[in-house]
Image (tube, rainbow, N blue to C red; front, side):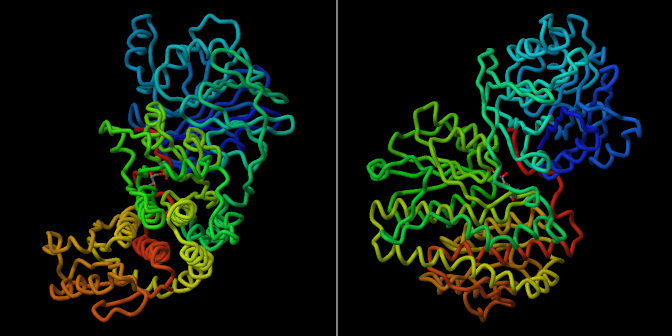
Length: 605
Ligand code: M6R
């Protein structure tokens, strides 16, 4: 969703900000804008454009010099995508410029009040309220003006503010929307995502909610919204700038699918303890006594992370013998759930920013629950709010659709399940068995990736389908759910996922030659049941593509994947279906990395 990038230093700022915006494109947006200040007069110059960053770039005049600037990619909430509604928003005297991520909940009320005082609004956005409040403040410093404005604002924000009368600084603030400072040599940056900073510096400060900062070219200062100094110290970002590049692949999605053997290797690294056939998870903050006292596990996430959570629940229930289930965080927070002190809540999020998940975590914590995070982005909001957790170490995932993060999240759940299991009921032998299985994963994933050409041919055969059915049983069902989500997100082919056991309770009515079914058919105790479902489909002349551990007679095609332990099979069975979705979308000419209507991090409700 929306992205912020800002710079103060000695370099020509416009190209640098435009490059930063390009790095944020993956998050999803509909318009973009930039403000720089004139080196001589300090006057603010602004360009905005509906559409892509390249449309904005085309509008930036040749003479657009400046050494301080802020820029933004907007994902419309209040007011349609348009040039006017794009950020930055300037006051009528062109003195104050604001870029904002988040939502001002009381914007309508504040707008009415300001209009009654004679303020004329240029846009329909909630953000413009912030600009006018700052511009109208009588406070002496820019910091104080911003603070005054924030006092009356309800909602979430990450903001960056420039003022023509305070040309030596950018003031930023955070409440619920990420703000990250990039600390350079005689230059400072700010962004809502490390991706926009990493080409310039790896020294970063992530602001906390309720924190502000003043950036000057050779100095930065952090403090709370009530003015107390916080003295934040920079941390080094682990990822190289190259992690955000396409690395020779045609799309980020393809790159990220291909990276999975290394990514899985990373999530396992340093965590396995062969002496006790268990797993160490440093950040869990859960001692064995506490682990033994857990009566239930409730996993919360959205979209793909929810699907990973479903597999996680079955791994935890199976290995640790603790009743566990997963629920979409977006639903959980609205149904006034019973919050039980003996339940361990686990919030799953690749980005660590998804609003519905974050809000669920905050509600749970308010009610005294213990919440762990299973998160990819280090230092993200959900990781910080949680009492402890497991980082999934997938590395930056740029494509809007999640692939390697899904896989690594499931592996992280397997590690957590072994950890909890070995404190409770998982035997040494079973602990060893699962650990050996986990170690096999990177090579087995590589084996699957080597079938890409065959999967591409299959995709060409199924790409004409108007709709597809995905079925799986027990552990296979979340795999079916995730595969169907992947296909619809990037190919726009309608897809449904059902438990195979539910077929005859309704969806069988849909089966006909033009509706292909993708069936998850592992070699486990349910193999015969799954085969029976294939028979039912075949009897209705349905086309079947099976993902299985051996050729399936009833299927028209079978993708054969290597066998691991039954518990870990779902991890491998999902991989060929990522490739199937990818090649189907490619055959249909879709914009794979930026599917329509979707954003990488859904930071609004
Ligand atoms: O960053 P998160 O894991 O919290 O994101 C949750 C979902 O928005 C996300 O998984 C979404 O479903 C992806 N587009 C999946 O490909």
